[in-house]
View 1 (cartoon, one colour):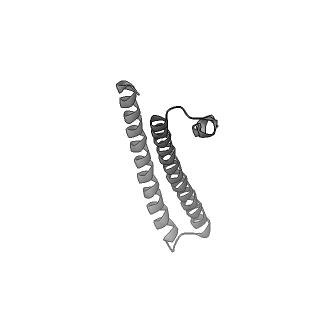
View 2 (cartoon, helix red, strand yellow):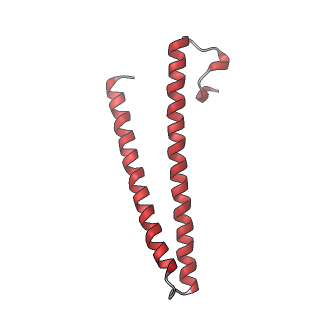
View 3 (cartoon, one colour):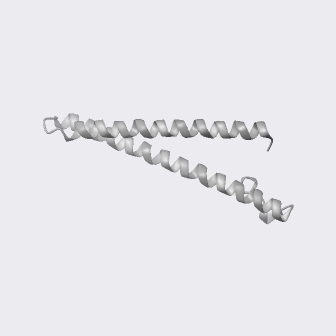
Length: 102
């Protein structure tokens, strides 16, 4: 990987991490506010239902974001391991091809 490519990838990852952190912050705020609104005893059942649905949606989004981050981390680890294997063992045979080629 050349120096410019490496810098672009690092910058891209940094921007992605910033975006992910921003999403986590936003979802945390949504959960805080909707939890407060849901817990209000004066709230009508219809309103509580709407706030409850928002809480469920925010939790689902939070989980999907965590899942995508873990998947990206695993993909990066696999890529590093495959590069390391190729560097140490030279050309790979058919059964040792990188996953994206299989």
